[in-house]
Length: 118
Image 1 (cartoon, helix red, strand yellow):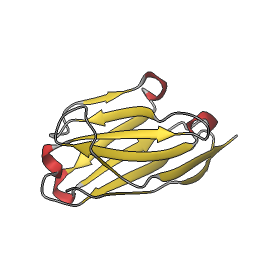
Image 2 (cartoon, one colour; image 1 turned 30 degrees about the horizontal axis):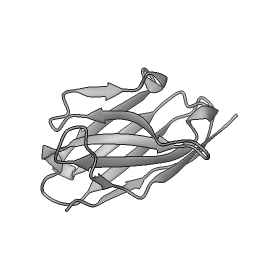
Image 3 (spheres, helix red, strand yellow; image 1 turned 30 degrees about the vertical axis):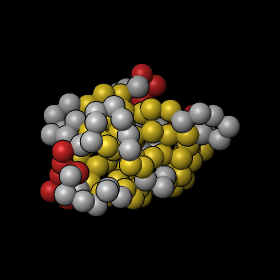
């Protein structure tokens, strides 16, 4: 069992930055891919990106490429989502997720709200 807790959300002006954290319990954190997702009001949940267990490789959806960076610190059981050049359309609840099978996200955090004002 893995428990995930996101933090770092808040209100920021367009063009600003935020860094989200995802703290994980359990000793398997370093073995699992970590994903980030978001869900805006009235919209379906959207995949943002992921980072491989070693942290060497990352993947991002097109809408955030060049602006968002996913990283992880396996010694701290924590993953991060650095968000720069934020836009109002980035407003959403952001979730981290993980699981033992790459591409299948079994465990989810509770989400953290990010609001970008214009």
